[in-house]
Length: 449
Image (tube, rainbow, N blue to C red):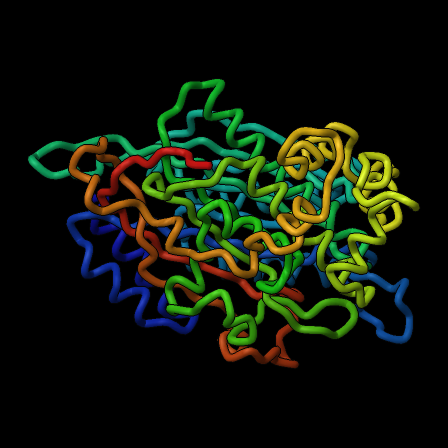
């Protein structure tokens, strides 16, 4: 039976350091779980093999990159996750591409690859088990920004029915996204990375509207190149997404130091690899409202970094000999903060949207009281997560559907779960994250302002 096969495949995950994941499956024999793995496998064109010679890369030594990628595949196939999302996949090397397609295909996976738009050589790969999913659609998103980053969207349906109670079974659809955001080489790229996530969420929202889809679980997987302290994390949280690893381990947004998943080329360790989950029962802010809130949060942070108080910031924004802020003064301030006026900054339309939201009385200028609304508004750092939860009292009147609960999550190597990076780990400069999800019955939510 498929359920038995599922339980056996899940049991393999215990070999990477968590008996708890295998045991969590046994609790759900009647309702099979699915697993999802995300892993930045470090493209050979980026892997340095001689610290004294930065130009010496693994890609120049076939035996090295071939052996390492065979080992990566050994681990992935041993885990046998239902969903696999890889970043820094070397799409520019035909031999390596054929290797992954052959071994994944032989193991029962359907895979899709996507290279970055600058033809640098690396990209993404997403693979799902044929026996577990029916593939409904596959889409590619090109950001066409300074990072030449891309994203994949896979629309699938579970191949087995999910029990909804009352002897009623339904087919469950899922949207899965795989991406790799730009590395923040300096603070000026924070807006670019925020833009990338905004484009992903806009695309997902448009896709659902275009195909008239009902709310369904959304999983965002990948290397987000930003920690729990960053704008991207807070932006996604404002949209109701939960970090699956933190949910499994009961960590809060403040627990940024508990775990790591990457040691970058500067030697710093941080948590950047996430599998985000948004269930259909989550009440969500309007996307544009969350976006504006995130930009204003960045705007305030830059002003505070310059040691500007509220009154100093108002003086910085308003024109000389004026007691209010004009639109031109607003744009000039954004330009000086490097948020506007260049090809990867805020667009004219986005800037106008921010202005309209700030100009509460619509008289074309911002007085001090309106400015205070920006300065003192509830920021992403202060938002109350309770606002994301549905009103349980109204669930009975809402349409029921299937979502997912996070049963467990494991990072490998295990040292990273304690906030340490093992010196003898050479498979990648990222940890591998695997999450176990169990279907649950939830009520559909509505979008809220």
